[in-house]
Image 1 (tube, rainbow, N blue to C red):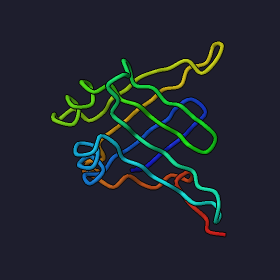
Image 2: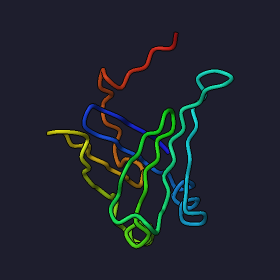
Image 3: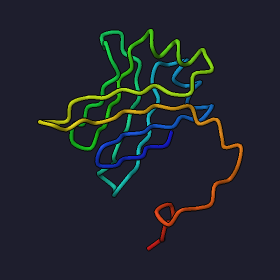
Length: 119
């Protein structure tokens, strides 16, 4: 699973093994350690009590919940993504995008913002 954040967007891209894990267990998780005691964790979970896709942040844990029917329909179809918007405070909206990462048909030229530098 890949996570991309901007000031207005939260995007999750799931590869084939992530999609299968979500289909089989109802959840997929990504954990990035920062040191021996701290990790940032992102969990995508299918939830029967959830009416619309929603994201919650609790400390270093990000949880994105998908309604059961919407998640099952998405997983079992050719639909690429699920898009939703949620309030992020007064006059602010967070766009949620959960996508199947089915690969590119062409290799786009790398943009400067995509470059990484190892320190």
